[in-house]
Image 1 (cartoon, rainbow, N blue to C red):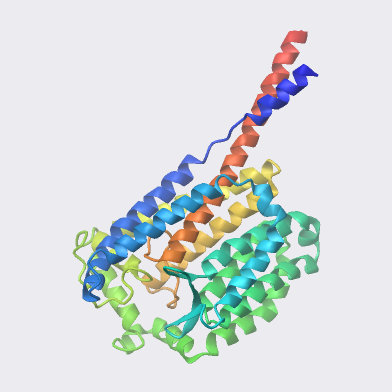
Image 2: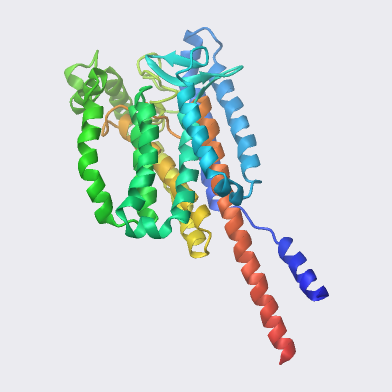
Length: 399
């Protein structure tokens, strides 16, 4: 009995390690973000008479808050999130409804996407992304056989996502709504759903998405201006043409850090939605490739962690890793595609790089959860190695 208790104590003392590659990729993107926000926002802040380093200071504050929350996230057992996935989903619905409450919700540029906090505003969809991923991961664990074998097992999680999408379209926020749908479908497919069932559901969904995209005049203008921005370079195509000018000026190695001309009141949202265009202008093709490689490393490590977790039997953590990696990589792909003129304009920031309080903070939280998955995976692997060594030693003693 003493030996068994001692062995149990040793098991509980086993620690894990956070994934080094994931940490390095996230840290590099955050560091690049600080540099580029500083470069892209000085002229804008100075023109608004709030001080040249206003947006940089704001970015650093939210980055510090995000790192604090991410550190806290790495301390929470994944089992807690799995047990409370449904209350967290209800929290997501509550946050999306909160933007419509007078006095709490804020309307900016014709959209209700923010809630008023004590000292700042918060874009609720940034938290909703992670809350939905947690719920979907729990659902895929609890209904594994149904998802993999039955059409209804696929319909239910898509229905939950559709409920959130309807609330997002009411704000309106078509970009985030599309992202949630893509992440949901990706997680269901990675959870083992048959491609045939996804195709069956996609057939009626495509006309609905087309109607949503074409039902508002401003969305139609974005689509048409994306196809030929030079037709109306001073009206509907202004954002994209200025971004393309910035990309073209950068050539191979850029005009030099801080030397962008387009950010000087020509390029709208230079420090947020179009910060990639500033990177292209100041750092050139080399800067674009660097950003792509860093996001590929971040997402790649996330998918590897997810695969290893599922192979180890930690399915909830594995699906969370898949969902977070999908969300970050898809958002980065859309943001970069918009800046390079290969996708229609969407209001999505570049994760960890663009200036933005809610986005920066919740991206850090998501990475904190991904690090927690890697920690629990490492702990399980270390425990298995410890038990294998103990068994080998016991076998040697008996021999």
